[in-house]
Image 1 (cartoon, rainbow, N blue to C red):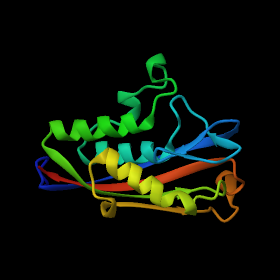
Image 2 (tube, rainbow, N blue to C red):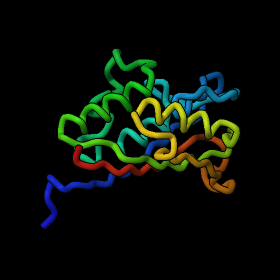
Image 3 (cartoon, rainbow, N blue to C red):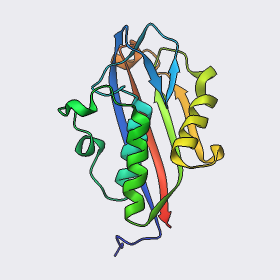
Length: 164
């Protein structure tokens, strides 16, 4: 039978936000030049949100909505890098340390390839990981559904945590 004290644990995370004209587009803590950005209560950084949920989930903890409810005025416009720091802190309290993260951004726009390295560096610094332990890639939805129509951005993320 699996133990809650397992030496290694894996978590997955997912987030999606609609795009809104005039909003800043922040992904992985990096501002991306764009005429629209993800809409949400915080800075709506879907990349950080998906990674934070993966980290929390790996430790069997609640999702980011539990820690940062969108009904809390104190979270309005909040920097999502702070959400990542909190997720890392929460697993640390349980004796776990983050080992690596990997994420796939799904968006038709804006084009992200020129910004991937900056996102990886920012995420690595925030999470206390070597850059080589942070994977970020971008893909499109091949013009299918609302993501494919350029109406939003989604991210799938996974991570590995280990006993410290």
